[in-house]
Length: 620
Image (cartoon, rainbow, N blue to C red; front, top):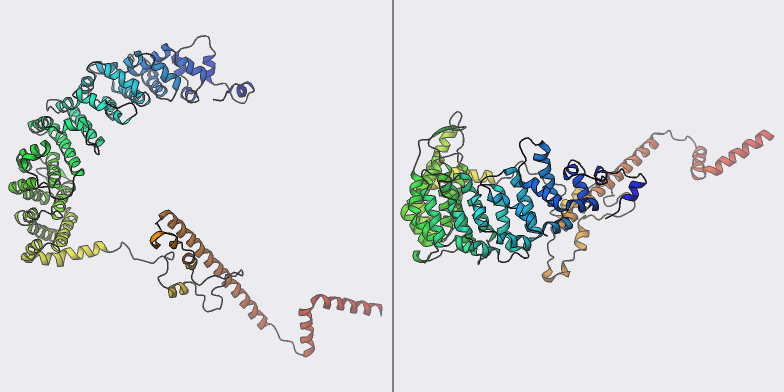
């Protein structure tokens, strides 16, 4: 770092307040923390300031600011400013300070002391979490060595799972496996029963914060190990014991609450992870050989179907009118669960869904709530998965057993009648409905079974001709009137010639300066093509270069247009001069014509002769 004493001694820079304090015989940490320049001086690695901050009493004071709550009678700066400044300094890349912290476990003990308290200040915990996460990233091996030595520390983390700062530290520890020196962390967490402890936090007797944060951590574990097949935490989560325990908490939540909502969210994330690691082809696997996740899901699928049919007495008024009973987040979550089950492509699961007629239940809700687009999106996804799958039996069940064609026709007619009313409004599901109908038409072209079902319904052809096709034609039209851009390359040489036509004045290819302009402004691009330099005669597409070339072409065309416009103005100017010369009076005799020609041809000689003639006249 540069020594600033030279500039300060010669008056080029005023001495900072920090330097003035450091020059004192006695000062405190609070004196420095009261100065606005403190953080800036730390960033510039002020040597004298760093030497003071790494003293044991200074370090203890900074850790105390972020871990111990100030007394009620303390000033505001002690409650707010000091903790913030201390956390910022401890998170800086100041190597002497970091080394000083790890000379003794005392400071890390201060940092994690809040886990032993039943309750603590969330504001201070946020600063503590920030510093702890920073140390985990900078000194991974030393920090994890200290954490692993603490007795029951994972249980302490889980005990405070309702507090987001604790969740942040725990997620950082889980991700340490990917850092240098973090190998073995997941095995250690598994031995400490991390997964089992988190699932126990789904107990319906606990507050919703526990359920939400437990779901968030488990979902993050699934996301972190999306492409990992040997994660001990994921294997524990997908084990039969954990899946059964999670389902027991979900279905025990009566009346439905946050345990049901967030617990089922974890199940859905696991189902999607399994789908990410499989193909789209139907899976012929016996029910007995399914993984615990799918096996337990099929066991409880009938209970979830009953939940879809349950209604409540709750009602309220929305912008579209009264809603009684509302759909609710719990039934919406069940439909999302069914969508991921169907997307798993297991034929045994499809068979169970057809037996329980779950598709009919979903479609009834689709048309019952015309303004719930979250519901429409999920059921639209279900229909798309089924229609474009290779399970013809499931397709037939959707169209015949669930009566999808008749429901679409009836809903379209109801929508038409609604629009005929004085203040009629188009139903909110019509966009999804038309998309489903279009998919049916597409699938029927390649499936004789689907085409037969469609042809057997006489109303379907009328619906497609009179309702669906006009809407699709309108949707396929470009917004606004289409006007070809002048910057678009011409399709033929004739259009290119017409673009630069100058009324047959003979100067079509002249730029007014003396350079010849090609009649085809794109000829240069074709002449200098380097396609032959690449294998197969095709040049790799570089969209950045293409955009730059288009900009250059636009500039060239603009310059050419400006030059031709300038040339046209010059021509007009010459023509105007010619017209003015024609309007001048003509000479009456040959002598006058000769004199005028002489003046035009040799103007300087004529003027000299006139002067000599005048001089002779004066002398005579």
